[in-house]
Amino acid sequence: MTTLKDLSLLIGRVLLGVILFAHGWQKFNDWTISGTTDAFRDMGVPSPELAATFATYFEMIAGALLILGLLVRFVGPILAIQMAGAYWYAHRDAGIFASDGGWEVVALIAAGGLLIAGAGAGRFSIDHLFVAPFQARRRQKKIEEAREKGLAVQHADGTVSYPADAAPVNNTQNAAAAPAAAAPAAAPAAAQQPAPAQQPSAAQTEQPAAQPLNQNKVADNDGHTVIADQAPTNNFKPEQR
Image 1 (cartoon, rainbow, N blue to C red):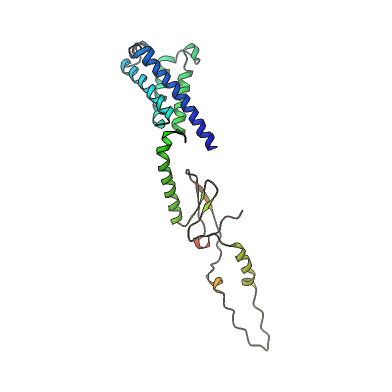
Image 2: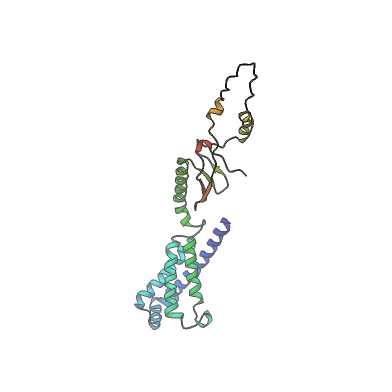
């Protein structure tokens, strides 16, 4: 599922980046900044020369950033705002369809920008190369904090890391020792001296009474689950399956 998500983000942002760069290049090369300024002035866009210059260079730069997967969470909202302006000044009275000059293209570009701003660039991007080390350090810090509190950590792959003093209890040994500990002492005969009280073994003395476990698994966005509200760590038992 993660690979499918990353591939979808890669294909989506590259296609969006190509379309956006093409629009910016059209304004720069075919229409020129001067021609784009005149078109913006006829549409009633405020400060048409400044708006035309910004739209032209932003579309080319933002398109390249989307293709590379760099700063996409910053580019996405600005792109949506620019498309909202294009809708208001150029397309709002022409209906939906692009063949009639409608707003469907600018709406799709704005939606793509917002989706990528929310989801990020994905694993196959330059953003991931910069962000991944910080996420790994933050994840390791949370694991260390959980271990300091005596909590087990369940990882995304299903493995569980136990604290150093909370190794899983051997249930087989406990089951074998239980009948011997629970057996009642034989009643003494009338003519015999009472037998001395049986001293508990060292293992029985050191083994604390079992405490109920109440494990609440708290999901973590980094792919870890901290098993909280458990019994003391020297009596930790893994969840029975």
